[in-house]
Image 1 (cartoon, rainbow, N blue to C red):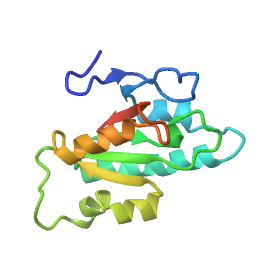
Image 2 (image 1 turned 135 degrees about the vertical axis):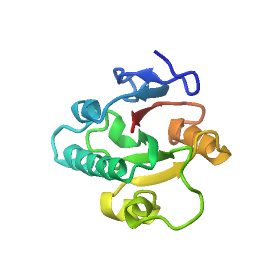
Image 3 (image 1 turned 45 degrees about the horizontal axis):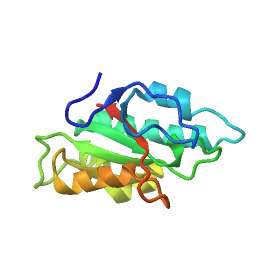
Image 4 (image 1 turned 30 degrees about the horizontal axis):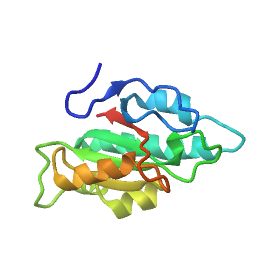
Length: 157
């Protein structure tokens, strides 16, 4: 089943021979991410990265500010020892763009806080915003491989 806006595919497909997800946005659960990418593979790196991602996801659920979380980075590849997890927080359409937020909501969307507490490379935006569209395009690009695209994961909140 595909989402008409992004062409979201349900479930995490097998990795391609190049170790990347097939192009597209693949909707999944945090448990599916753990099973596919968060298990021990010769070191604790993957379980450690997954623990941080899952902790951040719990914070987002408490903050109640997000529609989706897009997940990318070497964590969602076949790389034996991934460097990082990149996330793109898609804020709710009615999220206030001005005004004072309580700390639990402010921190959940603060790049500095998320990087420091969870070690995630963090971006945020709103559906349809031009900067969001640019970030989504960057997420789909394969570093050092012009013209090659890869898949990314989406967790609904």
